[in-house]
Length: 332
Image (cartoon, rainbow, N blue to C red):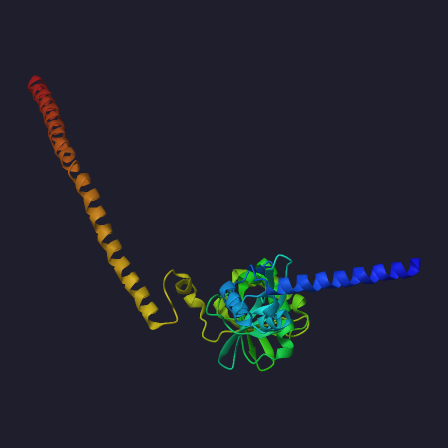
């Protein structure tokens, strides 16, 4: 009998618990959703492609009655993950009736211009469109890049961004046929790296070339610097470069490659020459006039002295002649 009573008590408690649970669930499902909390998980590079207002509008579409029981969480989560700017999304409800949406956005690794279209590519190699609401400054890549090369290209750009030297020199990447070229901010030359293998070695070789040779030279002297060959750096000279134009090329605010720039340079030279010619004769005349005026009275003062000397000589001559005459008189 005791065992039967125990079993009966257990069954009664289970039934009561199930009844209370179903009642609480019905009450919870009929309750209105109190709040929608959207959390944007930002990493090292904050992006704002997804707007919170758009997510809230999407929640309203999937739950127009705002009842907790009417919302389909798996479908809503799937819909949010279909947004091209979203990397991952997690949707869940709290016991308080608050809906939480955690979103991780895609971060562009580079911007690709392919077949006349611009779009972003993230570190995972996933393409997503340009946003009208937000744009992130990223390196521009041009050419027919294959999707299988996206991740390797993203690794290259990440290494460039982390290195101060590379970040200073490289501003873009182009692909011509099967070779990749790095565009530089210094000069008009390009750095040919070929494929995306051994990138660290190629960048180190270019850095050594710049520090030892390119620093003391005009960067417009070169058309291309190739790093695609193993343990070699091959340079191609610019056929239009002239050593005599190095001074003009270094002049500020003058573009030597256009005709307008050369005309401006000639105008500056012609304006500077007459100013020098006019200034020189004026200085010579002013200095010469005061020197000639004090010289005249000196010559005039010397002339009377010469006459006095001559009179003295005449007096001495006359005295000697008188003595001779006296001597002659005595002899007679």
